[in-house]
Length: 158
Image 1 (spheres, rainbow, N blue to C red):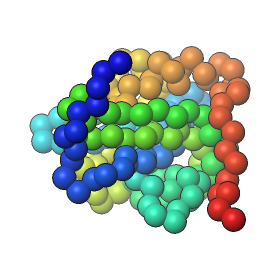
Image 2: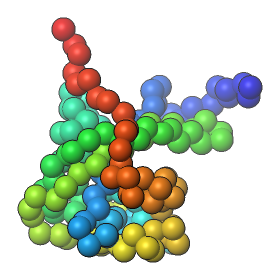
Image 3: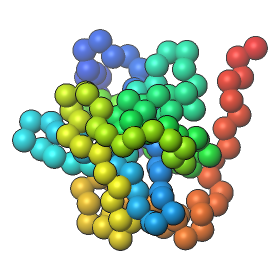
């Protein structure tokens, strides 16, 4: 087992939690958001950072609206993963939920990192640069309708 390094990103003492929404349309396309950082362009699932006091569902709905202009209904929790930089400078907990578009007009939000939003054919997902790299896992689960998954027990604060 590798010993954790003590170096951490200045000002952060706990992981960032990111909620990502997987939306697959009836015509077998997946909703993705294009990010630009410096000279790099890549795709991500729409979503973003969980805010204090916000549920996973609320975060997913808010972030999808901000990034894509679309309204979404969250159907179920699917996956959980982590992303920890080798130098321990970043630690992200990724929560993936399945959503269904219920309205809105597709357009990229105004965050500087957003370079576009599109519905990409599922057939192209394996050849698409997606971060985190969950494209293959999504493709494996589509035929079974994302059966199984995790169960969310809600806010249990008493």
